[in-house]
Image (cartoon, rainbow, N blue to C red; front, side, top):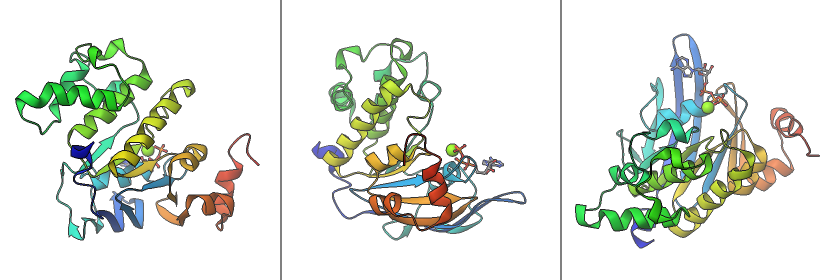
Length: 248
Ligand SMILES: Nc1ncnc2c1ncn2[C@@H]1O[C@H](COP(=O)(O)OP(=O)(O)OP(=O)(O)O)[C@@H](O)[C@H]1O
Ligand SMILES: [Mg+2]
């Protein structure tokens, strides 16, 4: 774990400052400011189309920034930056089907060639996948296992921050828990900072220390998860909470 935690052990901060992203005449993200600190999980909620993925993409340089900035410890971020890794919704689409999972993980490694195999084993163990299966192709794994492979691949780059964009949304409910548990375990052990995007408030309650609610590209509310979900101030947040089936 020492290697993984090495860069996130300080008080690193990933800051989104007054970010605006426009696609033609449409403003997808409108003046959003967020801070993800090392060692904590910031949840980002909001209905479909509210701009969550666009923020994630802007952070890693995959969406055009119309105004505002992304900073890492105060300095303007230049993308791509190894220290920030993104995990996507669909693990099967994110992995090369003709490449063993071990090889996909090794791709992101910074370690020297001789240390690679050992490091791949270590990363697989970290996400609770039998390292003896490193040479198998993605098709030999379930969706939940593949998502854990994607997390291992992201960690191979020794990032200080992870952006997880709806990483359990495409998975069967029965395997979502294992993915979330692995993520929480890694976060606690390494002190990595996570921006966790989800429309699922129950998942955010489980994982996020604090959270922000986005509506039509604008931030409507931000605060400690328990407070925000327990005593929402904004009408839109209340609506989101009320929309969750089986919750009071
Ligand atoms: N490349 C693009 N070109 C044009 N419009 C885009 C592009 N990417 C996103 N948008 C628009 O920006 C808005 C925000 O989209 P975004 O994908 O960020 O929403 P989201 O909150 O992630 O939604 P979901 O919960 O469905 O994933 C939407 O209106 C979308 O159509
Ligand atoms: Mg999205």
